[in-house]
Image (cartoon, rainbow, N blue to C red; front, side):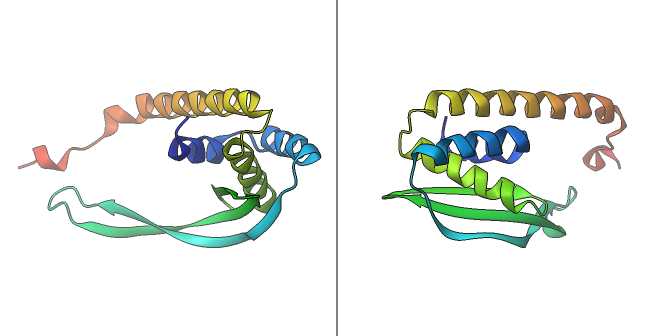
Length: 139
């Protein structure tokens, strides 16, 4: 799994299972917290459909953390005020970067999380897509 896809999967993974896996990693791996976990705001930018001009739509609360395992870095950012989840995600990312023995299980967990998230988005989109207004088509 590419690292960018991994970040996305960590962000949408079940928080309880993510923490359990991170705890298992911490039993066998010395992890140093290098930043956070902290709560912050992230600006969401979208594109206006007529003139294709970007604008700031909203701010979203996020939690992020960074850890180190030797020379390997782990990072995670999740939506909401969820410091434990962000730290667990960073630990999981660092474990994968360091080639931890649990890596195959972690990869499978994250792949499942991504598939479930993709399906949830597809289900939501199928409900709202018929109501979409295409301003480009309006004259």
